[in-house]
Length: 419
Ligand SMILES: *[C@@H]1O[C@H](CO)[C@@H](O)[C@H](O)[C@H]1NC(C)=O
Ligand SMILES: *[C@@H]1O[C@H](CO)[C@@H](O)[C@H](O)[C@H]1NC(C)=O
Ligand SMILES: *[C@@H]1O[C@H](CO)[C@@H](O)[C@H](O)[C@H]1NC(C)=O
Ligand SMILES: *[C@@H]1O[C@H](CO)[C@@H](O)[C@H](O)[C@H]1NC(C)=O
Image 1 (cartoon, rainbow, N blue to C red):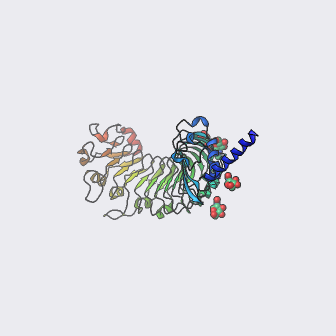
Image 2 (image 1 turned 60 degrees about the vertical axis):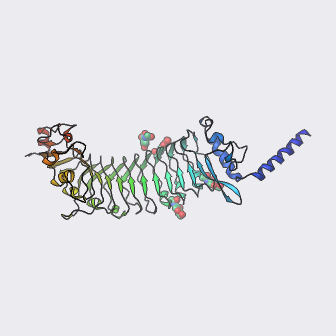
Image 3 (image 1 turned 120 degrees about the vertical axis):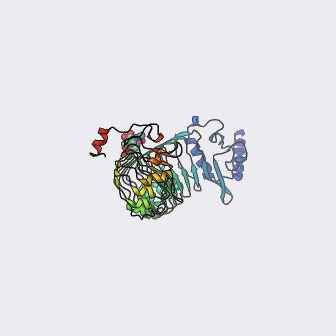
């Protein structure tokens, strides 16, 4: 009899709590499942997840002692609360999420960056068809990126950087038609980079510090503003198609295996401001056509250091109107420093940017250091001429410091006749 009463009481309580429940039951179940997959020992007292006490309704509990943080509810349909954001960054959580179903059909934002989550990325993420932000940076996710991630039509920001992901970037990413920002840097991603021409809104791509091989991707959308693919295994040169990237401002392809000639169009690109191609195997560059009045170019910074480019210093670079930082260090440049470089450093013409940084160390430049440069005060501009073949470059001049000039033998060997 007593047990029947308590059973009735239980049923009554259950009915009451269901009647008062503000959160859709499926979302409560999904929150529980998520919490259960997180290592209990990583939920420190006071952390968001430890406040998830399912004795009260999650969406209703936000004002109390429980469910204090980590998610957001919105009343989406017929008065019941739906979880629209799950935000648990930088909180020290660990565990594998590979079998979590993420059954939150209204989730717009999933942010779990900077924890210790491990294991493969769950396929079920692809069921989050309303997601606009997926931030999984800085965890220990491993294995390949699931093809299914390409089926999130509203996704705008996808951050998978700083994990242990391998395999190639899925070709299905070309289906992420709302994507604006893609970060894949610091993983172990290999293979060729896929075609992303359908991503008409993509403006930021960082795939640096991986093992991506093949050519520099030639199929990027015209919306792209910044491309960073530093420290990969890319080969070939800059594709002609970059001419058509009418919003492109920054290219960083340093530390790859690029070779051959740097094409001339890149120096007169209509929007490009920063060109970083250091530490590759380029051997030359093509000179753009220009008139004595200068070149149309938006370039502010050019770094071609640590390549294998030979020949005289390019005159046209001294005429780029907005260029203020140039590094050509550690190449095989020879000859004298052009007057254009000297004037651009010491007294640039009005309306023309002067060189704030001019790094020419570690080449085979010869002759005398131009007189006007001798008068440069330390701190006025960052100039570096050490490690060349100048006949006189004493360490009393700040731009000769750090490295001796090369020996006569070495300079002669490089170029049989040194005047
Ligand atoms: C996506 O959701 C459906 C329906 O809830 C389920 O049957 C399916 O297994 C889910 N997919 C994944 C990959 O979890
Ligand atoms: C990716 O790494 C896993 C170990 O985490 C390994 O078993 C697998 O072979 C790797 N796959 C590729 C394509 O490198
Ligand atoms: C891309 O989307 C289209 C249409 O939505 C679909 O038919 C195709 O299978 C998707 N491709 C991939 C690789 O997911
Ligand atoms: C990356 O993958 C390669 C093989 O594809 C493997 O040899 C290497 O150890 C991996 N690096 C890391 C940091 O996992």
